[in-house]
Image 1: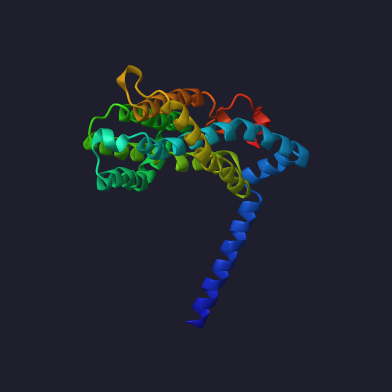
Image 2 (image 1 turned 120 degrees about the vertical axis):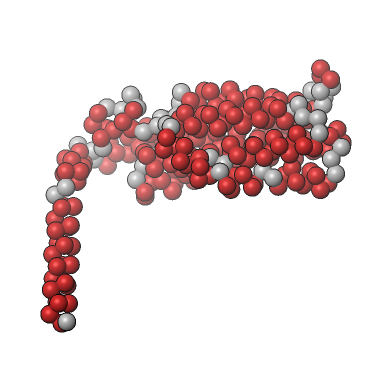
Amino acid sequence: MQKTSSVEKDDRVENVAEKKHDVQFSPELHEFNELATHFGEKRTKSLLRRVDFRLMPPLAILYLVAFIDRANIGNAKLQNLERDLNLSPQQFAWCLTIFFFPYSLFEVPSNVMLKILKPSIWLTFIVFTWGVIMTVMGLVQNYSGLLGCRFFLGVFEAGLFPGCAFITTCWYTRFEVQYRVALFYTAASLSGAFSGLLAFAIGNMEGIRGYSGWRWLFIIEGTGTCVIATICYFLIPDNPSTSRWLTREEHDF
């Protein structure tokens, strides 16, 4: 038994040594070492700044829009949403809560779709779709309609954050990802200021074409979300290999 154990131990040592040898002389590592000789610290930082400029603004804008759209029901309440739809406090609470059930369930299916479609296509699709849902929320006439819209809003908003995080992993090393995720995540803190000011301005449209202010709030913000989603389709770079603004050497690196 001792002899067998020592033989197995020697085999494990040899396997580890072979793996280290393979990693040390792998084609990928050899290619990286060659590219690294052309990319000093200054050039690397310059390249990362270009990527940041191309990638971070559209992701931050989409995340900002997401938080404005999910929270504007509170502003709509101040503009007599409950009164117009004859909602009880419990019904309004359910309209708030129902959003988070699909939001937690549909993150994984959304990640699967990111593998099937390009991130720019999938993210544009879900943002545009929830923009349509937001617009429809401005036309609902009862509790059931509002509850259904809030449910499907959670379905499509679920994929945004994991989708944005996925794109960053296509562009940055694991030591660079956390800082970039934090950058577009801070857009959520700005949504409180923007949503309040926007709701106040739109609230002055009370009575135009017979619509209440809260209806215009949903209609205008939903339409704006659709427009932003369409623009961001042309701005979001999927990965280095398909980005024409990088040279061959840069996207290899």
